[in-house]
Length: 239
Image: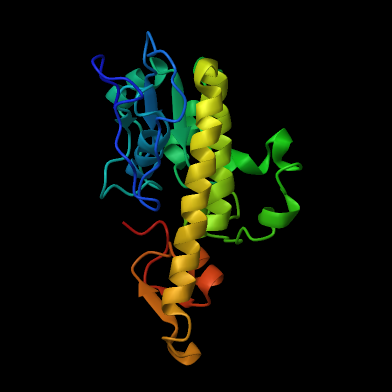
């Protein structure tokens, strides 16, 4: 992440699928790098892709191995949230303890969910909600009635990432064009990943054998996108 001795030009050529080149247009180094709090490591990775030269390493509230459905912010988490420039979380009831705390701080900090892409006023021009919202999967096991694991469908995930690019551009307007350009490359990498998977696995597994058995019901979007039946052994609120 941000290092005072580096500039945007000091980056390497990325892998087209695994990394996005952040050095698109020369922009002066940011005087005060952004302090960002994220709910999970997944969002930390997104911030790295988009703002590694514009933000300090983000604080992660929910460490790997902790159930986001049962997580409750501790005192350190609350202090980091109140001092942040931006708090990013998934939404749709995946982190209810975090969402409950955010509602108590009365807009003192900008808090944004990835699921906010469904409500953004610009979604109509981007093909939402009709093109993508109908692909969100219902689930009575989450408080919002929608399965929040939408990142397993790269086409839906692309729209969520566009939402984050917009937010970063609003907070850091001198870099807004870069955030948009990074998103274009990131979207291309998602399309390539989607295409590679379809080409690599098409016809390799008989339809009657296309089952995925998991401990946690997190792969329904993957199954829906690529034609697998998903079976989970535990409900979302299992320890």
